[in-house]
Length: 203
Image 1 (cartoon, rainbow, N blue to C red):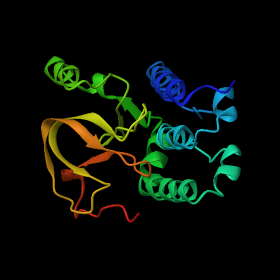
Image 2: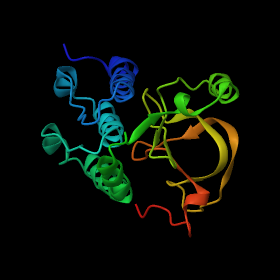
Image 3: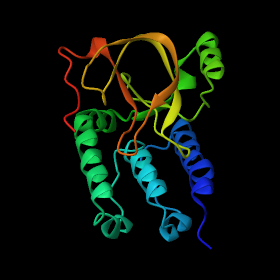
């Protein structure tokens, strides 16, 4: 029997993220997360989309898996795949630069922060591995569980939500208890001071 959506999202995605980040901490640089057998059997479109979103920003070496070919006939999945390409293209130079320097592209937030900020994450209800830093200027906070809202913790700084066209900066430290994440969206925040002129993602 294929795993349920709840098992897919509440167990498989957090396990995938924690495994990849743990390998990076131990010096693993060339990691390409693949599908578990359960994902291959799953007919749950939402779970599959969330997997694609998570895996696409966990490594420089992501490719749309063969299982997506059949799913891409669905207009919603096709739109998600298009958006993933847009997002990865935005960070293409970052991925390439980190690879050349031999620096991990992804870093756990809890490694970057002091005790006060770790307490902020805990108080916000954000598990340690549910967000990560891409390079040194981007926070990725994908949906790892079923639903369309999640808590997000932003550390000190001015952050821009790349999925929102307004470009209004958010001042951290800040806990966003219910940040929206439609099925087609990956919550991503970029430090404002790293942008000469803010340009949101053209999705």
